[in-house]
Amino acid sequence: MGTLVHSNFSLTEAFCMAILEAASCGLLTVSTRVGGVPEVLPDDMVVLAEPDPGDIVQAIQTAISMLPKIDPQVMHNRMRELYNWHDVAKRTEIVYDRASKCPSQSLLECLSR
Image (spheres, rainbow, N blue to C red):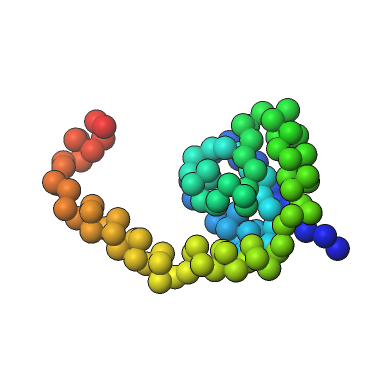
C-alpha cells in the first residue's frame, strides 16, 4: 500500500493539530490556506489551496503527483525533530517571556485594538 493523503478543508483554523498528527503518521496533507495552517508544516509536507472547490481539486492532483517521492518514515522523523516537547516548551517560554515584558493594558484598550 502506498502513501496516503490527509485532507483538511476548513474555512477557519488556528493551529491545526490534525495536520501535525497526519504528518507524523507519514501522510502528505492537502489543506485550505486559512488561519495558521500555512505556518504549521514545511511546504514539502503540505499542499495548500484556497477555500474554493476548483483550487482544492488542483491541490489534490498536485499532492497525488508528489506521492511517489514521499517516504512516510522520513516524514515521521522530521516531525519528531520539528515538534519535540523540549523545543515546543522553549518556544512557548519565549512567547510568555515577551508577553510579560509588554506594558499592561486595560480591558478597554485591549478590546479597542
